[in-house]
Length: 188
Length: 220
Ligand SMILES: [Zn+2]
Ligand SMILES: [Zn+2]
Image (cartoon, rainbow over all chains, first blue to last red):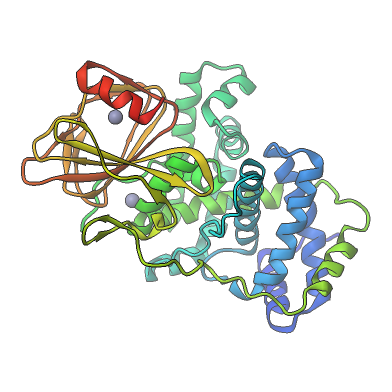
């Protein structure tokens, strides 16, 4: 549990594989110590109160154990895969709060969309290009991208948080996303 | 089927972030199911989420959280294999012989109702959010929908047939996203009925007679 070095993507992917194939608890402990506090932070930033954030982070990490065999490094990197689990767990959590009195819905949040063959090949390189592309954004643009992920009503929330007119924020989001995609397309 | 109109970057980012409301999320979900290009772009925005997760300042879990996780896993009798989608019964029919898109088969569909000359609509009830508004529209060949503007974004996925407005021609598989500043008047192409799936984020500003008829239906 006490590993201060930040593991790289390959290491994280290998740890998930070990959990999947050997049910390796030491590998799981390393994943937990790296991801649980980050998922927790992410959920708090996303607006969940501390108790709920921790509960959903815990559920996310339990899903990592249970679903480890579904992890496909050709499709998504370790962090991206765990991010999508956390995202879906958050949606499920909000849904349960909203439909507490309605019969439990059996429909899981979208889990599998089959990627095309070419998508598989692109996925392998995507993670590093995205990281590089995010670094290449201006601070202003990176801020709107980050805030888009953490606010329910991106434009209005962001406008308020930054104290900017709505139109300015809308065009900034558009520019940042366009730039991000251009950088990604250039690198692929 | 060639798709000409796709989800915007902003919409895909909101899907990636899990922040699109239930109704629009379903409309975009139907588009994604039929559009490999948008699925590919979605992967990119999900990777943005992965990078943000990696680089965020961590917030420690409570003491004992890891032990609690191990205990929870120990308590599970057998490793539960999480199956993707629950097997659904007989596919619901949108119209005789035409099933609902697969991604909508868990929705409860109300009977088609006449809401104006040549226009019928059916409301879909979403298990994940019973208050969400998701509407199937059937518009006869050559019919005009009321001219309107939007308070939020209007998401429309064409399931069959086609329509045109001042912004383009939309056929099966196409997704139209009309932003809040835009006014338009969709007109169904003359060669056949158009069936589409629509959801609004925010509301709609309707003008004219048919507009007033639609208004109570979409319950803004
Ligand atoms: Zn598309
Ligand atoms: Zn419209």
